[in-house]
Image 1 (tube, helix red, strand yellow):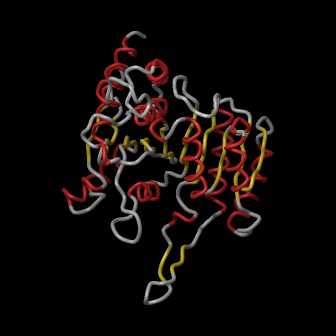
Image 2 (cartoon, rainbow, N blue to C red):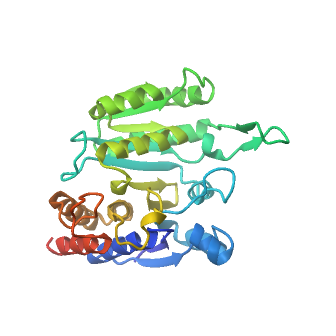
Image 3 (cartoon, helix red, strand yellow):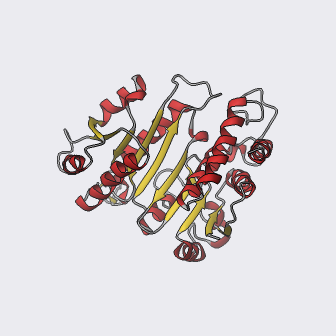
Length: 339
């Protein structure tokens, strides 16, 4: 029986995580959840957004399941806990699948894109400072290393092979950022020939954004540096219905964290309105990671059935819905019990 560090998160986090845990329990998988705090809730309780007991739990379990956390915007407040955890545990691969849903009205059908994002360096390395005493000039340093580039690009190609996908597209800005992005692109060109069964493509990042909204079906697995991947993964979420449907995995050599990638939505906290789909989908990724493939597939089928029916879903999926967060979770459990 695996033990998993559980971080319920801020805002809507506890309510959607409760539904995810309920669904996972109904699948028949036995997991010991070790509940700890992080983010604003931890700051208010412990005076720090990332308490020692939280780190101690993750040190031991090497697996975490996390709800959304609140991070202040701008120069005040504490640094992103998501970034801190990724860097501390070297969770170098951020994997964000975006796939069209039956029952969700979007501009496109049959979108199926996986963004693989380098997760530990780039502009998110946290190397920034002011250049003047008046703090009127700020500088951020982007760090791109050969080692990190090799492992994330190799991960993307191996992911494509393991999941029977046809193509990997490397997105970059090497035409302007000739050293950092140039290094990333050079490494991609070195690694691609090692995977002759996978089609290789490369696109400049701004052109990639344009092509993605004009014809998303040309993309399969996409790999890029940290900030570009952050942007593209939200873009692909928009193609299939929004962040309320998108899970995320942060994978390292010996640790992994699975999460809802949307925000903590304090404006709807406690109103039974939050969509639990994204975090349930993150739970599915967690189950696949620990080898519980049958349970993961069963949950996937149950969630897809409920979303496709469009009746017992949250109002963001159907404004005329008669259900909320709890009711949607209950119906997913009932569908799961039919399997």
